[in-house]
Length: 472
Image (cartoon, rainbow, N blue to C red):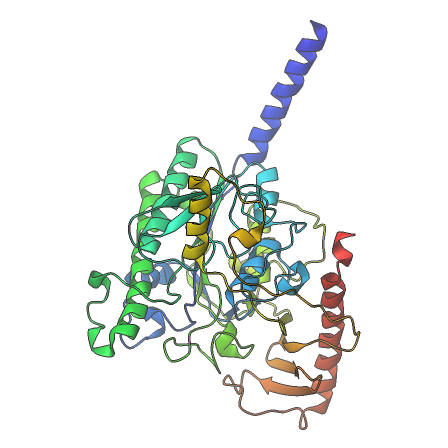
């Protein structure tokens, strides 16, 4: 009897300590679009695009004017947000690559601190069958209804490993599922973390007719592209309205961004080139942080990227954490809260030279559905994916294949290593040359040498992680 009383007392103590731990924790919602460029919003004076809800959010929140994705394509940039690490460290080098199962993720950390966790929408960090080592459950999500990649109207999604068809536009479905989760957690007085990751405006662009009004004269392709942004904008409005109806807007952080720079010939990139490149146009993204009563409206010109989101969110939530692996991200929480003047920190990028892996979301989900209808479960990812190449990591200490960059504002240094191993360098002063058109490597030799050494040191550190040293 004494033992039972002791166990009961211990359990009650645990419950009380857990309740104390979660009391006052802000809810956290990370909203991300897919292929929306830095200038693909009306508040940046886009000539025709209509985004009234993002415009209102920007006017009432903190806009990160110089926000960067950690990579110029989707899978790696998503991995960086969840890990706080440059994506090559987590072996997520290109689109379609999986995040390493041994990574420590933001949802895992928040779950350990009393949060309910949910993922809704595009995943693109691994396969979505039951017991997959790289599905959202493995990454720390309690609930998830997700797509392997981009998805459009009437998609088939994976509900914790069960292929299920949903009716409607992809952005509306994504937000509807997320709001169901949010409302349930709010009713239970449970702090929550959710990622709302749209499949738009990724191609193939298929907008609803009502959202293409005013864009028709631009041609069907562009009308559908812009219409998809207007659709997702409307659901951002639904989210903000729902938080206010629930009375939890002051307890909730909403962070909106895109996963990479804008599309060639369609998007407004805010710099040189477009998605798939390490130039400004491939990396700069819209980014807005809203937390009524805590974050003041305004514009920050502090350069920041996706890796900064994990440490920033944890500090905003008051969670002290000792990471298991080296982080590249730096918390900008004090800047977000207006407690100190923004101090730029270096940002590293490395678009590794390796092939991406094709991932056709609907095909993958229909393959999963067919197996389930036959009473079978997935035992090999190849049952879902038709292509993929082995990832080869360079072991040469002096070789860093692909295009990398080191941004120590206003300087941005590029290192470009060809497939044959030839290396070239480019140096730009972004304050004077935002389009990266005037290479200063020969004129600014002192700056070039200093930045070069810092960048090479960082590349070597990343390469060490790529060889598996972080998981030993």
